[in-house]
Image (cartoon, rainbow over all chains, first blue to last red; front, side, top):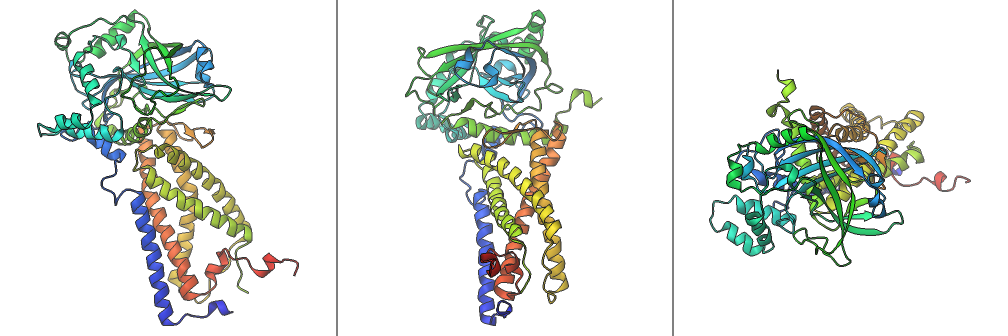
Length: 350
Length: 184
């Protein structure tokens, strides 16, 4: 049996050194892959931590868009979307929806009149077991072009140095349009009077396999009434939630879902660039909100409105945000579900 | 002639070795990136996980049928114990880790979609506390899994290069003469 012959002591030491080297290199490759050797890598943990650089995180709550209220309803597809995407959700019919009106702030106790961005999380389910999740906001475009720039904005906007924001804007001129919108766009007194926009571009695939880059918006049926923010501040810190609870008593709230189809050559990778107004728009259905429930015990609480949970027939584009949002939302979800005790469920604490 | 694992067992071992090592690297890699590749890594992680689960179940059945060659009689008892324990741990993790991941997604209310668009049903009720427990188990066991894989590789190389006792060859990729030319 030649293979059982023992090596010389010298060869054995060489072999042991080789074994140690193989194991050490493997462990180092693992550590590198995990990002432990790359402190500059933009990780989802860094993006999520970036919302609370100056204050403690809101334990048990979403790390951004932390204040919100749940709703349930249906998406009534009119069938027109089937021409654009083979997703079952566009076939004429009514599909259950769960969602969340929310404010773009990491503070779940923020006064409603102090938060500029309002959001809309939504999950639509179809009988084939598939889901379409999204998280939309009311500005017409996003503040920054890349996840890296978003993190730079987090750092600059919370910096104690007075020149941090001017320097950020100098480095990211695309932010100016958003700042102008934030400063001049009218405010309304209701979640029901806001349009909500996907901002990120996605790809729809139709029954023939043809692809189209799209964005979509929910356009409110309720007519927006402009109210100055000073006036809103007088309505109390939670006027949006109080208003929507009252308003729903008068009947369901509706939004028309409008899909905007890009022309060839339109920028899909940069959500700061809105497409020209003349692009083709297709009304694909109506989102009907039928009931409102407080978040603590509500059906939206433990849903991650990850915009990459998409049915067959919709997929992500080269827009870098959906992947980054998915990765960061996952961290936020993992943390807040682990902190359940810090945000008691109303029914469970009695 | 030192007895070896059957060709089927060796094939399963080496295919799974590639899958599991890829899986561990994909896992820590996807958890630390916000790049576009995050989505394809997550998709690959789920798909590889289910593949490993299926292969591991086949492998356990094959192992129960064909058994394993005995360890060399001169191997110290403590090393033998280590070999037995680490192999139980490896088989256990191959089966438990994919189930934990699948259940974690289920408890988190996420759909489980594999590469190619195959949707799997949930295997756990939606629950924040259950999600957290499963997340913790999946996370910490992953590092234990990688540590045991490294020990396994070190031990295999020790058998191959230092002891040269045939233990490595029992699972080694080399074909024996009768497998190359069974008619001889």
